[in-house]
Each structure stands twice: as C-alpha cells, then as structure tokens.
Amino acid sequence: MKILFITDLYPIEKGEINTPTTLHNFVFEWIKQGHKVDVIKPNFVFNSFLRGKKFYPDGFYEYDGVKIFNVNYFTPFWLGFIKKIPKEFDFKSYDLIISHMPSGIIFANKSAKKFNKPLVCGVHVSDIEVLTNPLYKFYFYGQMKDAYKNAQKIACRSLVLQKKFNEILPEFAGKTFVAPSGIAKMQSCKDKIQSKSLRVLTCANLIKRKNIDKLILAIRELEGFELSVIGDGRELNNLKKIKASNVKFLGHLPNEEVLQQMQNADVFILPSVNETFGMVYLEAMASGCVTVCTKNDGIDGIIRDEENGFLCEPAPEGIKKILLKIKNFKNIEKIIEAGLKTAKDYSTENCAKNYLNGAGAGKARKIRGRKVERLKG
Image (cartoon, rainbow, N blue to C red; front, side):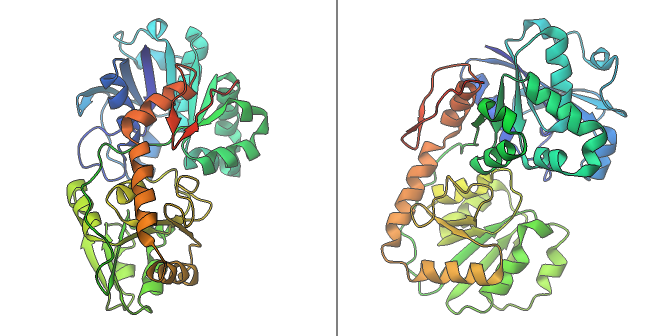
C-alpha cells in the first residue's frame, strides 16, 4: 500500500523535546511491514513560534531513515497550497491519505478532495480543543468538521478521546476507531517492591497540566516513599521550591536512561490531565513498574484499576490514597504481571497493523485478547 502521511507533529531531528516520536513510530513500522510511506509536514509559521518549536525552512529532511518534506505557510491553506509541494509527491498515486493534528487534517482534506483519495483523520487532545474552544470557531472548526465528514475513518488516539469525540460529534461516531501507540521492546525486569521504602518515579515535560506539584505535595507527607522526578520545563523552579526531603530531581534524561530508572523503580505515576495517550505509561509497565495514571484521561481504559495498574484523581489527597493502597496491596505481583502482559500486547508492530486495520486497510487482529472490529462508517 502507498500511504501519504500528513501532520505537523513529526520530528525533524533528534532531541526535539516538544515533538514526540509516537506518529513517526507508526510510519517507521509501516515501512518495515512493506508499505510505501511519504511524509509531508505542513506548518503554520505562527504556530511554530507560538508553541516554542524550532523553525525549519522548507525542504526535505530525514529522521531515522524516513524522508520528510517540511513546508511552511503564513496563512491557512487557501488556493494554490499544493504548488509548494515538490513534484516527487504524486497525489494521484496514493492509496490512502492519513492525517493528524489540525493543520495536517485541513491540508489532507483539501488534498483528498482535490485528488479523490480516501482520508483518515487522527484525533488528539489538540483536536478536541479546536472543536470546543470558541477561539477556533471562525475557521478551524468548520474546516475540521468538513474533514471528518469527508473521512472514511477517524483514528482516536485513546479510548478516552474516542468517547469525548463521539460526544461532541455523534454524527461521526460510526467512523471512529481507537489507534493507540505501542512500545518498541520489552525491558528485562527484576523482582520489585523489596525495599522498605517505595521507590516512586515520574517522568514528564514539567508543565502545569502534568500535576507534578500535586504529586510532590502528596508524597512529601508520606513516610516510606522516595520520589525521583525526570524532566525539564518551565515549572521546574516552582517545583523545586516545594520543600520535600524525599524528592530528588534528575533533570532531562535520554530515553535509554529513563528506561533504566524505570527498572530501578517500584511505582511509576504521572497524574497529568489532557493527555493524548502517554507512551511513558506503557514503557513503565514494560519495565515492571506498578503504573498509575489519571482517571478518565490518557491511557485509562488500557490501564484498568487494580487489574494491571491503578487510576487516581489528580489531586494530592487522591494521589496519597493510591500510593498507600499500593504499599498495602495484597499480591501486588499480579498487578505487575498483568501490566507486563498489557505492554507486550501493545507492541509497535501490533499497534501499527491495527491502525491500518481500523482504517479499513486489512483484517482485524487481536489486542489484549479482544477483537478490534472494523467499523462501518
């Protein structure tokens, strides 16, 4: 199959803190599986500066063996937007156009209409924001809704986002399917929770919605707990001002070192809100951590409370309650074992195949023992 993948959420070079590799992982896996995939990264210049992302001039780039064409626009995609795309991209030759993020979806929808190609639209937290924030009403809301109408399928990045999207635009609910991310490999795990003091770990871009301040406020009042915080960001100085003798900051670490820290930890917790998915939770489960996420957010639905992990309210009292429950939980090894099994099911290979299956491009496979149905849209 020949796929055109269009999104502005795609890394250009290594070490881009504000650009996750989750969408690239899909593309990389599809290429490994024998598909031909071309990537266009359309970028509104204003958004690039607004989000604090590095600006890249128009042109071809390569990331991890994948060729990307980065193209900048000062205005939304009006007449002539295709003219900036090189002739190497033969739009008529693609079997499927897959798009993620608002600018990618709008660009892809116009392209799919122009060349009469099937379209798949991804749904992230940012898309929910566009659909519900009055600031986007003038241009983006109508453009996004038109794209969903034109799409053959809508790929929601989590069960939580699928539910939210279906509540906002129930007329398109029949097109939606869940397209979670996967992890590349499992970690070798050793026995956990043997020390008297529970080793708790969190890892995040240190911004307000990650709620690391609430985690520190909770854990500083608990005896027998030690918290390590991995990450950097604008909230770092404020977090360090919270007096807590059982908390240490490790700063930003490469992924390999993050995984090593996970293997040394007993519990991983990230009580953030408005998460699209949260690959870090799967990585923690794969490393043998008891893993905790926010209830009704992000990876909730994959993490099932007291089955393969725990769900918490994103407030100090809610976090304290869960940590104490974990410390006194009977047969915590079963939680760890179930978490490891879940992580194995959500491999990059399985998730990439199931994405295309959900998009209507193949037969359904099984994840977590449950059939992923091909929905009729």
